[in-house]
Amino acid sequence: MGFIFAGLALVSFMCALFLVSLWREDNGTADVGYGIAFIVAISAAHLYAQASGIALVLSVLASIWGIRLATRIYRKNRGKPEDFRYRAWREAWGDWFLLRSFLQIYMLQGAIVFIVALPVLAVIALPQEGSLTFFLIGLFLWCIGFFFEVRGDAQLDRFLREPANKGRIMTQGFWRYTRHPNYFGESMMWWGIALAAASFTTLSYVVFVSPILITYLLLFVSGVPMLEKRWAGNPEWEAYKEKTSVFLPLPPG
Image 1 (cartoon, one colour):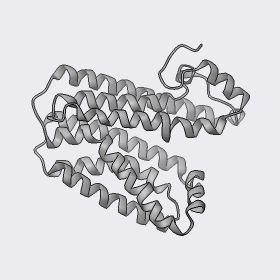
Image 2 (tube, rainbow, N blue to C red; image 1 turned 135 degrees about the horizontal axis):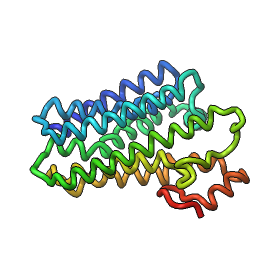
Image 3 (cartoon, rainbow, N blue to C red; image 1 turned 30 degrees about the vertical axis):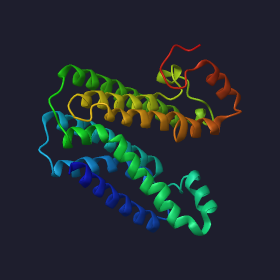
């Protein structure tokens, strides 16, 4: 039942976000709501289950990530026009804009949230006794990922605040070892949550669909490709790209 109510809560929340986006005339609303959607789904699952201590810990970890992400995106987008990707879709979709926005942005995002949140939902809805060792290893991985994401974002923000760095490429700190330390951190957090959850639910192997999906999206769909496309052809970027790992932190070549 926890899965069902989590799904219903997600659908309701994404519908509400869609209505807000129509009022604001900005589909960037989906980006702000993405992190909060995890909290909505997990909270709904808790309402219909006797959650274990492990489930509560994992719920807190996912919520910390979700709140931080939503807050960061809100601050980044506040007072700015609709993101260029959404503006392009608004123009390209024409008369089908409302339906395609609802299905391809909000409902699709809701489905992604459900799959990525699966490790936490599974521990809540279908718990079993598990291995504390794997849980602690997963917790350690989550902490590493969180550190990379938070520290990487902070280093980038500090770099971008300097007027002299306008149009330049960030190549210091964590960014010296990977072109996307924040994305690496996000992926690592969900691998950690999945590993921590795996032995505490009857869906032991299924939960790894979550980090596989988020890593795939970051590497091949909405993360790395979209950002790197913007810098293609920039001499400084091409030199940086040549010697710096795309994802995993590695010594510069």
